[in-house]
Length: 212
Image (cartoon, rainbow, N blue to C red; front, top):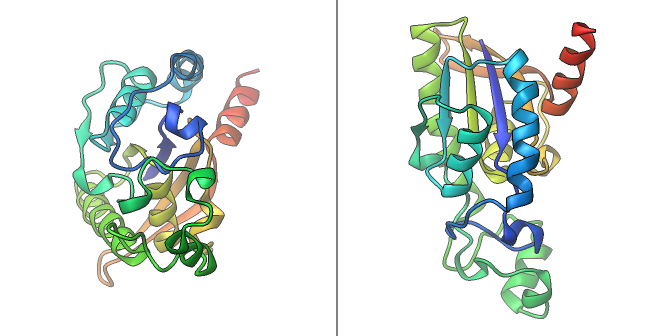
């Protein structure tokens, strides 16, 4: 089984370096054009059996552009982290805020005031991902599954299941990019691992080279 994690295209808040969690904003027009070009490449190498998406507009729009006509299965647990009082604010606006300084000093582990802690966010993403992959593995172990979600959601899942392991912030990826991974699932031990992980753009470049 292969899984494809794709971060949604860029929004106004992303471009301005804001914490975009609960804010349900659309994609930028120029981003839609870039995603359409990528969809032409994806079409030649990837037709996922199942397409899971975060219910946020930016993810649904991205999924529609990349995989037009494909049924989108919305998963509430794959929403971006709840940034609480930091929502839709950027570094310039938060600089000097003692809660923000505390957050920075903790390496992002102390949680967002009025929002989620890192553990809470990772737990909900990882739990739902594990349940879904377990179901899909039993249903069709040779399937390919695409996830159009948020950068934080991808980071949370790969932090929990990557093999060899890399930590949360090491899995950052830009808008419209992501990762490809192979799934190893031990039903007896109820253990799931993501192996042979590579960047999505690298995967597409290799696929294009093979076609030449």
